[in-house]
Length: 387
Image (cartoon, rainbow, N blue to C red; front, side, top):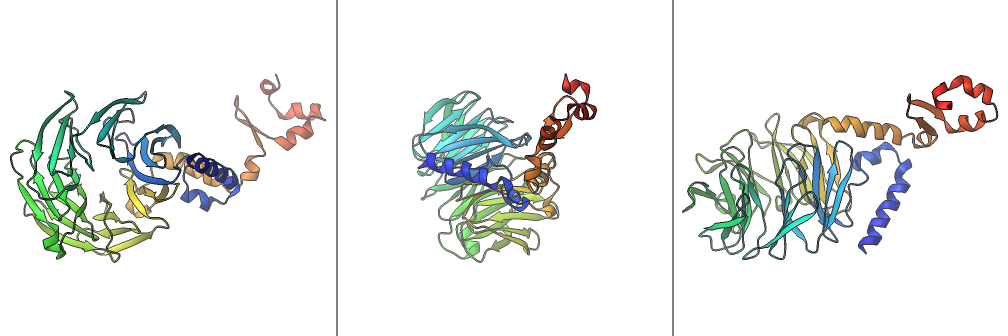
């Protein structure tokens, strides 16, 4: 079925070459598709590549944003729960599989597979110490030292339920782990005997067993933390008090799967399976709601721009550019605008032949007619082309 799906996608792309440019606004790059489902998309640190995981079969793809094309495709035997990009580009990636294995990929492909003591659901990387934190369902947090290649003593959480997600501050390397009861515990990586503090989302939202679904730290403000819950609430904390500054809830009451702060004008982007909400993190007022045709799994934004990639329960990766969130990246002007202008005139583009030496453009029809009158044709073209 997967091979048939990929063939159908390619046939669909060939048919849609003559579509208007509104079609290409939704499908930015034709190679941005998976056979059935797209799970997660993440941008590399150098902002030149995009890595995405999808189903079925389980596979991972890397896209070159400068060239707007597919870099590589790799198939796996098991479903990918989460992944982290270890290097500044795409050459080092670690994958968390649903069979208690983590898989390390290098430039050439799969490099090594390592079995975990128990089932896990999330990955968090500390780039300063090169330690990979892996929260498990047994309330233990495994630590893997990537520089030495060995497991360190795990962090023992006193929680009576399984850990659902994790996060790390890019400024202070403060760790946060959320559980299925809505409690988030914060750890100092220098002192791992006990947590330095905790917050209870169920207490502030007044809902029992409101599990933590996602955790995000602010890159500009080291004390600001965003915590999303299963019943649709997003709490903003100032970690110096552990009391939420503001609580924002959605009408659908669906789990928050992505939180993206650090936009100009105190704007924050949150998403659930149905919609993407843009609101002010100081006042809590909603500024824009983007509805999705398919269920949303993950949202990735390009750094310092208003461009977002949406992973949905559909073959194509949806793309949107929100002008209020920031400027467009350079590759957007270099590739998309050309494609949109040319796609509206696809018939004209098929009727053009390019000469690479001096960038001379000659119509095919004109070239055929001119074969009968070579004398007139020689006057129009440079001598280098005819020779």
